[in-house]
Length: 493
Image (cartoon, rainbow, N blue to C red; front, side, top):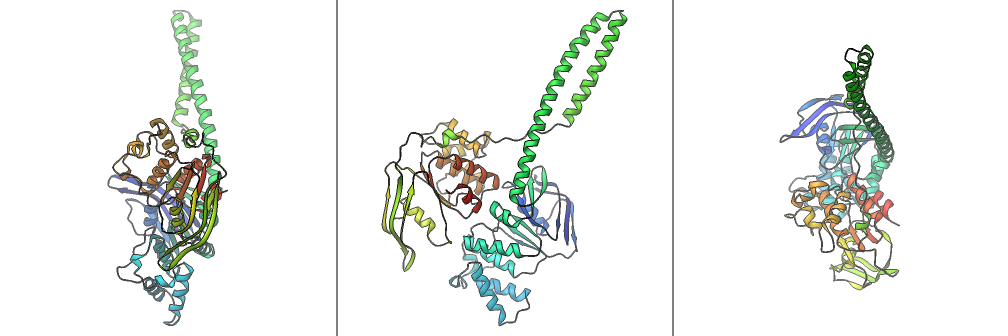
């Protein structure tokens, strides 16, 4: 089987989302689709899945009746159908199981994806975001398809469900297209990467790390070619200016003198040749590589530079937390030391966010004791991003009494908010962009110990890399919750 598309273009309200996109999917492909937020990844996936029309171009399916299953990033379920029945209906429709066998398979599958029995009779529409993702993945497992598209499948998954999904994808013998910002996942499962940019769709063989190395090598080569061409253009322009001067002088001296007339013609001929060469170079111009501003190290570490902190910053003693009769965690103790970058891992629902809130003083109903050194200034990044004011601009949101506008703009530029974009209202931003604003605000708050709850959720890969660059430069202490294994591996010490 294969799917071949070429010249695909799509407009939304006069805005060109996709233009002249081409690519081919073969039966052995497990493709990771990457690109900036809003570039059109989901639109392309929906077009391939026959869920959205396109304005121009062509798609050829071979065979024509290929069944494409698209698992959405934000799944929608029927109004009054339970979690259990959502799966049972699909299982009954697409399998040869008997009425006795089907419920056994459904129960096993729900447990595999991390939906415990207490959830089975709930309405599917009332599940949390992570639980809806798990349910939509479970439905895919029992569906009939030839080609599978997963749109951000690892969002909100805990580690156990994440590992299960990874194993399923690796074992699946059917072609797939996976839209993801999770680099670790793409490293494990993808054998090809598609990068979608405003210039089109580019294919790279191999997993995410191979793609990244190849892209970096191409960018370095392009930078050298650009510098070489710029030097050649400058040299030609200087030669042309020089020859113009010589030609004018020879032409002036020529009069009736054959020698000077010959000399003037020679200069004119060379001048024309050099102008043609310059024109050819400019017509085949190497584009200037885009360079991100270097991380604002001094701004990032402004609050830490003059602080002398002891070894132990935060200590927790015998912490216990319950909601009613349900114990979330029991009798835990810990130390957070100066310079630590600690990842807090665990399944969904075990109390990771609750522990962060206890440390930050946002949750007071618990047993045990937390001591925080007086020199510590905490900065808390919450998943909800509720510390931003939508009617204010990006710049207005991040400015503090301790920060100059220049410092704020320097940090914002290192987080991809450049030029006039800092004056956009936060209410106009995507969730990933809001996350970057909230993070910038945190860094500029003067905090020397950062508490981060799922910082990279909703962010595209370029945003994640910029966040990582800032945190790698940050010389303070970080205590963070994340399901992004690439991020964990890069940051945690």
